[in-house]
Length: 69
Length: 146
Image 1: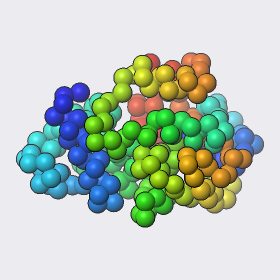
Image 2: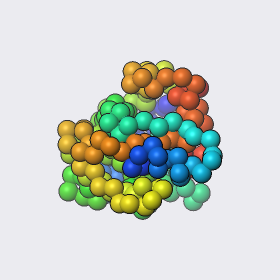
Image 3: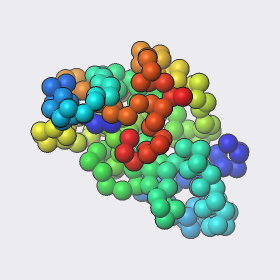
């Protein structure tokens, strides 16, 4: 889960390994807000797998790669 | 998750932020009134539930998005320096604290330093990309590698 200067840098870094998924940092920022903003709430409760999946789905992170189970 | 474990988890996170580092089991025992053994057994259940991550010695390694040890993601937020476990977590520390933040890492390919300001949840660098090598279903198989 790393940050690169561009997709070209991802490709060079992979050096022929199969790629995972690449998204813009702007989408990552939205994901971080949705995923982490409740973590320090005094009444925090664990999310269900379905709730976590809904966060990914809601940001358009669809397809087998983004399936949590 | 057992309500008592949720309370321990929430107290552990609160102490992490209060101290600016991962709390020790003895510190959490003093904080919660549990015995150190009860803290450690609770932490293990939370680890198994993916609510925090312990190292091989049973100490806190990650209270995501916070990292207990130095990493290549250094975050400045709420007047403190933190380490994050990955780029997702680096953006997550400001989100969790509900403050603006700054973080530094480097491009893993060319090693150019990357400095990112995050204001109101938005990064000032919009040209960067995030790569996830491991499919979501495998993230917790080896969370350290992920």
